[in-house]
Image 1: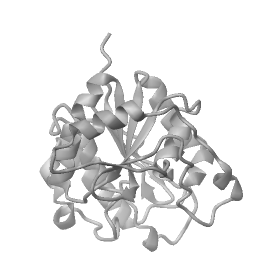
Image 2 (image 1 turned 180 degrees about the vertical axis):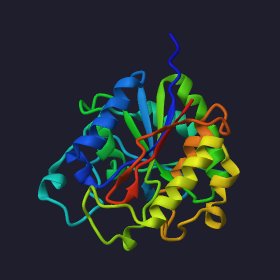
Image 3 (image 1 turned 135 degrees about the vertical axis):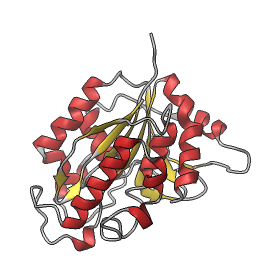
Length: 257
């Protein structure tokens, strides 16, 4: 039996995603269609740190958001220990890029919100890795180093949001109309992904319409390059998932073989 897993880039949404029946059903349906992973490695927009850092087993969730209902701050997602995966990831990094094993940091909402939908039983080991740079080339190389994990049954997920211009939103409804800058960036990225044009995707600052409004900061976009680096062939177009918008932001996601 082939244990090879795909790699994903998904939008994670704020905690109210947990109450959105449409996007939740899309995420749960995706998980049901995938082979069952032996472990999950998450790279979330919400942990930027160099050198590469790894989350701690059993640490409390990180509630890195504000202004939401109290129920979201009481949620838990306790998964089996991921020590073996952490050791494996550390061993894959070059000697000049040491890995730091964090002793107290748990999963942030870029990891636990989508996973709570995709794997609600919390019965799969989950390890979170920090995003150590915003340089697409370096992130592609990082993904390439992680690629062998896919043959070991590990699901690699880059968790961000294809557009994330929060300061420029004027409506905060799930069904709000997408601003022009969000629509334009989404269409451009969708076309580049369909061509497998990694160079264009990496040149988003100069080539993408809608910048810098679509990404006034870029940490929600750049996990895409970890996913592309982990692909068997980064220039082979993957399967685009969940086209559409959530609070005006693009939830377009990607699955690569």
